[in-house]
Image (cartoon, rainbow, N blue to C red; front, side, top):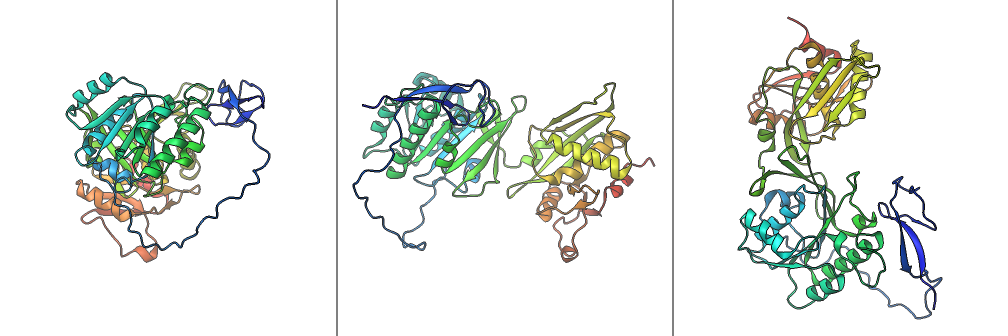
Length: 456
């Protein structure tokens, strides 16, 4: 009998090495390589038995599309593409304590009104989950609750004629297969347990939620192949200092990947935010220098947020740059363009930039709003309180058009804004407009923005 071969596997990326090392050469993580025993040698070839010929069919089939299952939580349904697809697997990741278990417990409680659901917790006892359900007001929901970590027991309980329609595994890092000689949460355990659970979900046709831990870099712990195996990957984001939570899809086989769901954490759990723009701007004070309202887009949803900047004299040889909610490299680029193309001298100052509300902005359309906030802070002249700003900045100082400008303007007009600072439209779009009563001020270069911050 062949002796089981020992391998050293990185617990962050799944890379395999023949000996232990302090640093993984694949992902650069330190102290992440663990020895995993009991892995059989890979066979050199297949057996002589013949395989079964598979049947090919055309893309256009006669079967009806699978009906989606609504969770009762509109923001979750939005991110999932309009509801849950039977037989699909969703991976939910996020920082510890951000609200993953709370969200899924609320979703299962809402689903239990029209479907059979099961919540299997490997991190908490049954009584602990019940305590959370009482706090959330779902103590009487018809949710089948269990506490288990053995993969064999979970498969035996779910593979039957009375299989639930929705199953939650919280979390996949706590589940272990007894035929693999490694600790729960290791790469081999997560890969094997996930594969078996997903295979059962596809065969039985139930919706499977897998809760995943994240590393210190914010990536889901375990092998990267886990994100390829599932149908949808959801990240639950947020800052513990703010009550807002963002549910973002980074992969979705049954919907768009640029949609987000906005929640507010309360003492009764997570509540949906139907109009995030109004909530993010609720505490905004007008006529304050360094503040600018950015008209952004998250998927198909327009979202107005406040961008705050502070430019202060620096006593350090290397001025400080502190950014919350935006890309630090993007800020450096905008400052360099302001210095080189507009003749400003911001590089010798300390610069602080913050996106209010804990939201993180990734689109380049925020360049112009950031530049306006920096110019406002440097000149101590407020941006007009009723103005919304968006546009992309090029390295030569030109302001470029962005997508879905009409949708952004409509949202600003709905919230009571009177004017907008936007890029010049191409000639073929001159007739388009979605701002209604908004006074549109089009600009083509950053030099035009300087006129707003000239002393009168």
